[in-house]
Length: 298
Image 1 (tube, helix red, strand yellow):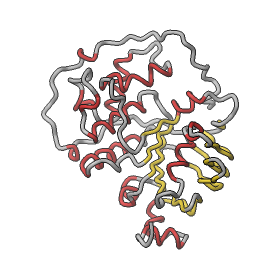
Image 2 (cartoon, one colour):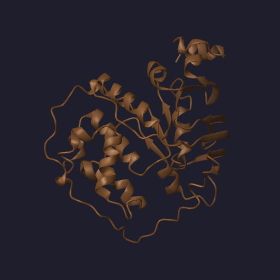
Image 3 (cartoon, helix red, strand yellow):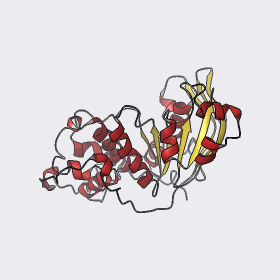
């Protein structure tokens, strides 16, 4: 399926929205439960999409930060990327949705395919790439001047995916998908910055989900969160993989062991080993992987 070339370039035409006001949502919020004990969010299963990297090299000027990586990210799986600081993990994921090219001197060589589409092709719309391949960053970054509702609605409004749809329903669906709806449904018009850190990160996930991505890249999404909020995000990832392919960069090896199906180990810009998570943590093929997961360096 061609997901990118068939999408027209964005125009300045106004987007027709059928939007109710956030205030029309139910005003009362049920008594909160401890976050870690809440039931998982029900997410409808959907066929996933693969990401393939072939001889990927990523540069900062003349410095090669990612050195000829070949890896397949399987559909509807969570692939964790582990490795010490500076090994190229974050640079690799930023290249997958074309964020790296925004850095002065940043360039990419090799191939990155979403299914069979080369995302760096000349006829590929970069906005469509970032719609299909969403990203959640290390620290929560809600738009500070926007309400909770407008944070989630920003992507659909920008990309045009709200055209002909009820924007209110789309926002509510994304918040449910991020496990946040019950906590915010009575205050959608309130500032997003009034949420806790864990809630802000789930709001950012809802914002990414609102444009219906095929792949979700997550660059250490729990590093700034407390253990309870971290557990809530991990539960959410397990649910979300039923409908999106997830690539998770993490320094937390316990987290990789808990939530991922596949783990890749990077060192000095190279992919050392990739395999099922259980094998990586119990019987890796490469001695460097064994030393890293045993905590002998990094």
